[in-house]
Image (tube, rainbow, N blue to C red; front, top):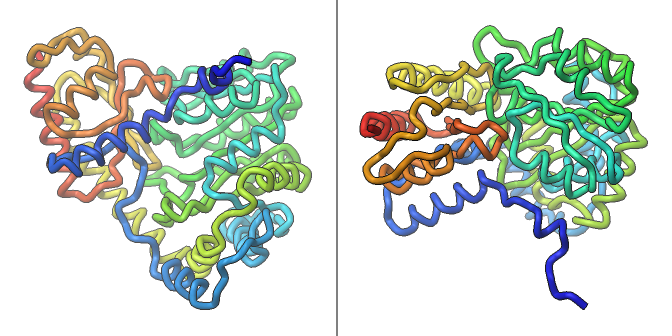
Length: 399
């Protein structure tokens, strides 16, 4: 018997965002003045309503297993959230709560994908999508969006559809571009799903973080006809600054939700009981207060980032309308040298930037966007100013 790894494990690429984040934290522990723009993690403390609810749950001894699909009160609160914000009617049985949106997304893929199925993925795209698709034995079909304003072209999506197409994976506001898909784009995608009979897997974890004149578009509000084939993925991490609590959820047709819950039951049993009660506290007590405070702060940071980047030569970017990311095009700088280092690609650029200026960013190649880098501006304004000052200094030293 061979003692080798499975083919799945051998082919799996590690998460670039987690890898860069871990390296940045290790360098900080060594005393280096690292500023990390590498992970999408708000620097706010979780809302007081979440902290209080978590403490209360501990004091009441809610430290045991819960139902595998989540406590009933939280699932009811999530249903109420979708009714309040999108006027969508779901019951608690249409919701499954998991240990973060990432494992819920994987369980959703495992529930709908068979080996050989194809999943359409607009790119640039979050690092884990394609790896999760491959773990399910399916195949990604990438649709390039970097030359269409980071918003999918309906014609390109249509051209990517084959008899093996099982679903499309949407992410708006988008990671890593911050792009927000408008009503016409969502209507067009929904129409294709109906015409060609595929599922919509809709990751809307950043739906509360939209700025300026842009508006978040929930696909079911512009095309209710696709409700029976749409699984929405959401969670508490981004808008509620609850990344470490690890609470995500899926909401959608009961047949899919039941299957997701069954798969999750064999993987994690249930999400942390205390974290579930904390999430319940956040939904009940912080939906219109803390979330809006953070959104306004992120909007100001976004404007600050624009003002600094606009003064740096030889880089370009498309101004994002949502999330807290900016994808920066480096192609004019690649092939040149910084000191003795030849900047052959975006990974080399980001590595040298971290080593020489102690600024951690993520190479765009991790998001299928070669020749770019992603900055996450979920940092304080002081860190943004200093980190981008170092970035500008680095660019000025490239010859």
